[in-house]
Amino acid sequence: MASQFTFDPNRCTGCEACGVACWMEHRERQSRPWRAVHTFNACGHPDLPVFHLSFACHHCESPACLEHCPAEAYTKDAATGVVTVHADRCMGCRYCTWACPHDAPKFDPGRGTIEKCTLCPERLAQGLEPACVARCPMEALGLAPLEADRPLAGVAGLPESATAPAIRIAPLRRPGPPALGQRPPASALGAFLPALLAVPHPKITLRGEWTLLLFTTVLGVLAAWMGASQLGGPPLRPWAFLASGALVMGLSTAHLGRPARAWRALFHLRTSWLSREVAAVSAFLGLGALSGFAVPALGPLAALAGFLALFAIDRLYRVAFRTGPWNLHSAHTLFNGLYLLGLLAGIAPLAWGLGLFKAGLYLHRKRHFAALGKSVRPRVSALRVGLGFLGPLLVFASHPWLVAALAVLGDLVDRGEYYDELEVPTPRLDLVEVMRHRLGAGPS
Ligand code: SF4
Ligand code: SF4
Ligand code: SF4
Image 1 (cartoon, rainbow, N blue to C red):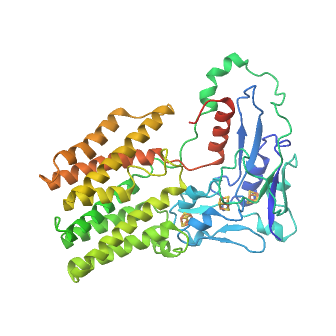
Image 2 (cartoon, rainbow, N blue to C red):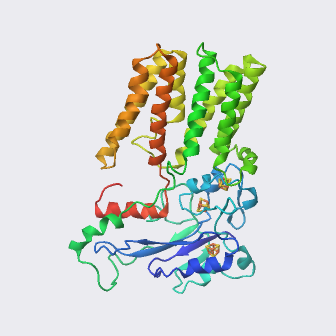
């Protein structure tokens, strides 16, 4: 029978016995805590309640981890509902850690694979409760048969998603804060607010994903160049293509925990955009090499595969929060590729149209950030606009290589900003957003 966790925040004291119990039960397999206790209003703001949430994997009915994992490393047991990650199938791409809005999959850097809550199958088989449930001294955590009706919308700590987490959370009974002894006076809380509302360390950063920045940029250049060479632009020499293709392959596997299992990336074409991206990149590199060395007629097909790969890249990043007012970004790889194609092939309407569109998206996003009080990095913006838009459009057609180099540099700056702006939903981030909303502090 399928089960669900139950959790009562009115009982939980935040003692973390559940997390310790989980570690004791699974310490041979666990490199990071699988269960985490999150505290809402840790500083005790007098206008808000203080409560704790104990979360692990929710063994969702529509698990995003399973849908997006390219290597088919996840399975869901039809009878029990348990979602399992099989470390021996994982290639360590960490895409599931982006896709899961509940922050359940943990990357083990030692093994280079993912681990997470298993729902203690060995204990369940013996008729025992999961270790975390059994050791909760307040009986705040429980396991019960799965209910169809679980009112989860708007529950703090459960980011909005289509995953249908298998958990029921009791409504908070106490509208105000519990008596916690000495609380700081309201007048002194101004100093606490920045710490209280600090956005947790983001999962995606430019520093962490620089290989992906280079991979997406080099691939965009190659796809545009291949397309332009079919349309009378500068020819793409086969050896240059081969060397760049090798660089693309190297960059795309550099961030994998288990690069030797990269071949598994093609296993989940049915639902994973990462699988589709890998398939399109492979087709592009294969067709491109064939067209360069043996069958020139395959050139257009290779260019098409290249642009499909760029489209797939933009789709797979959609598990992260929108980075602007719309789900369009001036550094989307498809736009970058088409802009460069227009510049290299001398197609003025494409170059001017895309250039103005991208510039509009860029400036609109900066205005949006400024309105939210976010940093707009004016010097970076000047560099991006000057290099990427003004430079190429001013010298258009007279110096094609200079034009292309300027456009690529501008897009590189923009895409660097893109990685720093991306954010994936997590319970901790959701709690901060709820606090901001309840305190009228506006979005982060
Ligand atoms: S909580 Fe995350 S890892 Fe667990 S089943 Fe749901 S989507 Fe997958
Ligand atoms: S292959 Fe990638 S998405 Fe799948 S479990 Fe491993 S890290 Fe997660
Ligand atoms: S159910 Fe088992 S594996 Fe999952 S958090 Fe609890 S103790 Fe850990």
